[in-house]
Image (cartoon, rainbow, N blue to C red; front, side, top):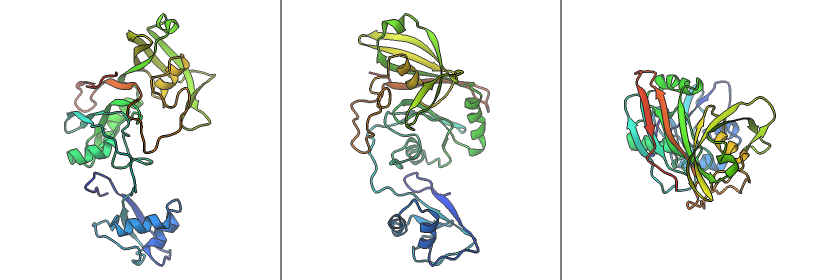
Length: 297
């Protein structure tokens, strides 16, 4: 794997023996049918396809069996996220970042350079950074990265074994009925709905639980403290929506709004913040506590 000056990692592809292609371009077009030939031509022209030694290759070059080539993704246009992440802690094992709203953690879809991972690689020069957990692009707050690939699994196991305590804050409507029940643990079974972006509650044994507390009231809004015991996709957003208090500026619950590709409305960030994280470091056995410097309006 190589990393370019923007902190973007390459992908690697093997050219097997026993196959015949008139050129490298023909190989890539045949083996990546979801990518247009014009896109591969542009990548070759921009020097985004190379040998493992970093030598650029051309689209018209001959097919070389039993070799590996490296290639980089290319985006003609990418949304610019005008908010800066902050590194809260860094040692030889982990890096803890405070992510702004709107910034994805890892590359996907329209996002490549404008991701927390690639920004941190460029900022720190540590190309082995890898997130050990993730939060939604819409959510702000704490994300922990492993520095050494050989140690990553030990940190990920903390989340698998549910021994990490995460605390979120959210702004949502004030509800007299809900306030009178707090603090409470809300449990339900959620699964993906017909639309892949949304989760939905269904009948059956609960697979999620969230401890909900009231922090502050400023009618018609209230600030809630959320401590998830499980880690399902959109769990907090789904739970508050089910309780009749969807998170302020949520573009998915209760109503899925059209996806904004480039012209993002930065004036309405989702009012959900990954505020605290607590765990015992599996390598040093130290008790770790990190708190986001951000707050919700």
